Length: 364
Image (tube, rainbow, N blue to C red; front, side, top):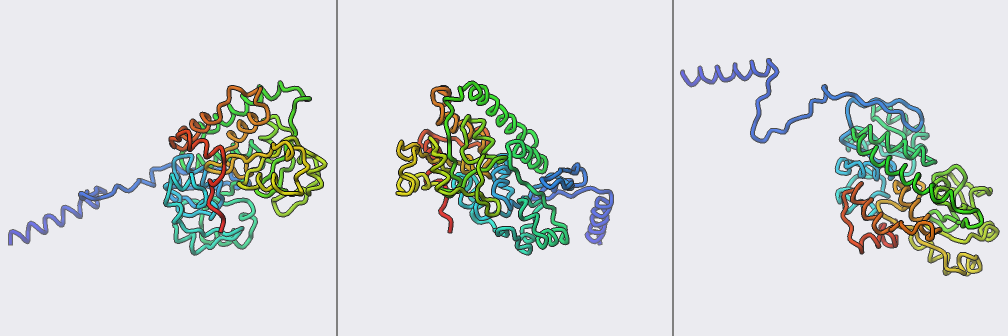
């Protein structure tokens, strides 16, 4: 009888504790975050949409590779739950967060496999503008109340804004501002020098984007950073062929421009240009001034690359070594990856990034 009474007393005590809002702790209990006490977060995305999240995102779906790079830079790579396939090919990124190689890929071109995305249970989904313009995809996201934020940029100013937006969504505004401050300082320091270079010393430059004849247009991110680096970007004042968001020159146009230097952001393209008979009489080819751009977390200088500040410094040093003698790109590379990705590079690893070869898995 005494045992039964004790059981009753214990049961009543537990019920009272629960009613009073107390929590009974067990040795292995995991404290749940008090979501109700967390302040909601409101941001304006690339389309001008106002998006409000109940709290800082802790489960992040990256439907645009660039956002995966930013999320990782902000120290939240472990919270990525879904990716585009391109993120799995970035060797430096997957060396930091190997789990990315095994994540689901619900994103394909502009389409999203909604069922697969739902299974990832994301707090937020970052998508590019072309995906956000697909009515069927957006209708499904809205119908299922999946919060999405459109991230895109076509200038350095817009890119800086994306870093601020993603930082706010993740509750990592201080880290985002640290990167923005670095970005702005690189622009300022580089301009101080390039603005003093006489016009007759300025170097004409052709920038190959992924493919040999794909290149830059005016009012683009690449046009911005090449201008800051002091290069005369030969393609931006000419009419180019347009295919979706990509723009292409003809080989005839490139011969008319006859640039002094060619830089290519895709591994192997510089070798193709140097070895192909059709390109051999270009000035840059004859003088062997065709260069592979570095590849780290992303391809430096790519239209969707986070590493724009590095592309600026590398290009300025390449074009005007006499004006940028103090720039040691190996040391800059080491400092950058330590400061923003907590990666300690030795000399060989820094040079591997600067060389740019073999830094991305081959596309299937």
